[in-house]
Structure formats: C-alpha cells, structure tokens
Length: 66
Image (cartoon, rainbow, N blue to C red; front, side, top):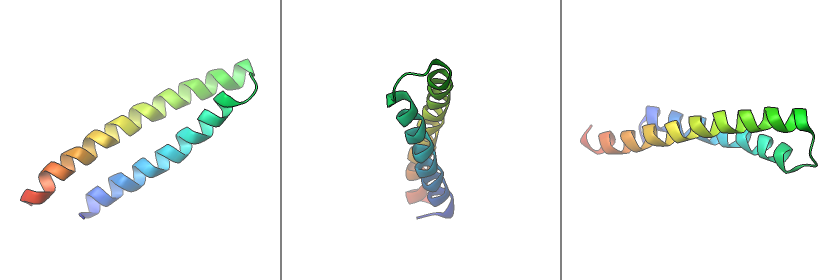
C-alpha cells in the first residue's frame, strides 16, 4: 500500500472517531445548544469522510498502474 493511501485511510479512521463523538451527543438527552453544534460538526465531518472515500477510491485506481 502506498504511503499516500495509508495516510488517507488513517485520516478517514480519525474522522470516523470524531464523527462518533458527535453522534453520541446527538443520541444523548436533548440539549439544544449541544445538539445544534454536534449536528453541524457531524455534517461537516461526514462531508470530509465522503471526500476521503473518493480520494481513497482514486488512489486504488491509480495504484495498480504505478
């Protein structure tokens, strides 16, 4: 596995951990301020995870030809 691909996968794993922390806040008893912040961060992080997934898929396509 290329160093770049490994880095992308590590970044994705880290973002999943961060996303999970915000999901726990959303699953907890409702607190408007905390829930609003958690919802915003969750959405931002999920967008980043989706971008990392696309980058990983791009590396998978490039790697066999390298």
